[in-house]
Image 1: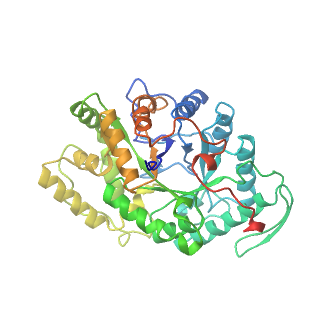
Image 2: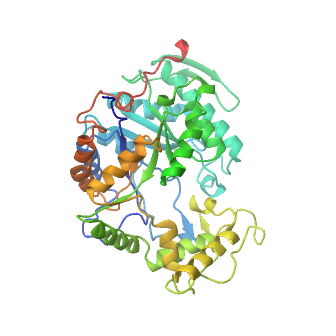
Image 3: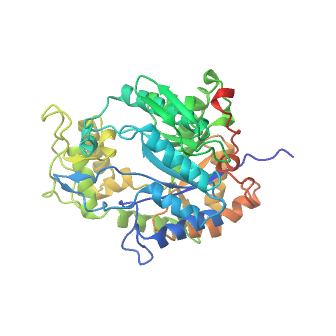
Length: 438
């Protein structure tokens, strides 16, 4: 019998945002060691490939004030992952590190340290910064246009790989972006160098992933959209001398379970209303309308007036600053009209429209239904697995581990033990060859 395609799962500690249901008594701290320990050990108990932590380089703002509905400080993610290396044995440790406002030697040293001390379990999610707002926190300031951001990211990754390849030896590297000479202080880890992850749906992002990444995070939670993305990105690999199995495609996914389908649907609806409070609904709308909407009733209709566009204000001056979601509304007037039409057609309030647009759950149902759906996605090549984001931390992953994972194992599409000792091995990726051997 042909062996089924194996599912890859990762656990994302969501950080402080409206994804987390803070009103639930089970919701815990997002900054204490114990929360991270519980989450990491749950992921390892579930035989997940890796734990993922995001990064924020500046607190977001709304109307010139800190956006306190979902923002507070959190320790440095690589420091957290180093701590998690001491309380886990197998699960991978993936952290976002920005390529726009960091330097390659420092990033390479920190990631090599994590990779070496964890026995080859580190991963780097390579991202870029898109706004001048974030740049104000750095001496260089400003920001880079998209084409230069990805150029810097590609060169930074190439430089980091060269540094890891020195195996603690000398380096002399000169590129358009970087000019560094010295001795790299960290030896190679058992997996050669950290696994490289990328997140992005743009043309530049897809090319970067196809040329350089081992895994790519995506936003495609619908099956057909996932299949189209899968075919497109996997189809780019050959021109870079790579095989389809060299890049894992992992959409982010939420889940809500219930003993019956009706109970799961009701649980999901309750979670959505907890995630999108009236204040949060207004905050989301302000990202589209680009103005103060505190006088708008969230339980009333979608505003009838149009958003303030960049043509009306200085370029880049958004009411909401430092939020990636602002970029999603490239045509805010059209978005506002879409929201109005949806509200009128469904008889929905502004809050209900925001929930429909921002509060969807990828998998809702009984454990059996969720297991069946995940397996179908992967066997249909809509993805290679999922990065799961619970709505409760730190214990929100436990129901999935206890109820869904055993069903996936029964299907023969999920491991019953870790196959290797490194993250690269557990992801089914080929060993890293030294650049001098490539």
